[in-house]
Image (cartoon, rainbow, N blue to C red):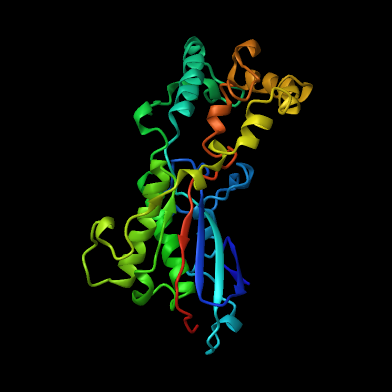
Length: 311
């Protein structure tokens, strides 16, 4: 078993050396600390099941290189197959999320008359502070990869290359094949990953356009990578089935959700009936959706080497 600071890679013996990497899409928030301030935030573990890249990397404060199990690095010809599941890098919120953010922002600004009121501790209340926050997102950013997301992919590629130096080599670079969905954040993540590997293998050469690389550009395959859009069983039994999400709908109107709405309304000092408990329309859900959203299998990065390489 190979273990990185925040990941676990399963390795099995195979007839030929092969490397397969799956790129999964999920949501990451866009704010990020500067290099000198990077750290695992105390509340990050509560923001859903998808660990941020920096939280995984910087748990090891002394090195970005993954830890290695030495028995796999013995001087023997050991064919291996490596499978890893990876998500795209940090992105902007989607246009749908931005519309929800505006809905919440408008609600808070409507109560601006109380913005200067102090709370019990002498500070401004949370609703007023959020109302003053400049909501600068425009629809055109619509989930695009940010520079932090490209850096996520670069760091990930270098960590993987340092773990398998004989597979991630000049000799094998031309055997790379990347498969992704047509989602721009997934394509851009794949390109950033590929660019980092090129610079790792050819540090003395200028970075070419991805179309001019030996391995070629990422190949788009939405039928594979966006399989829910093409899965007839999912469409008929879940998406278009009014009874499939019965328990979800029951939760939206249940006592637990009502208690949450009352607490949120009291904290923001807005009428409780101005908040909608439906997850698809609940204004506050957009506040957290940058870090709390179910993953979608948008991207897939596949790499295979045809030669057995000695580790």
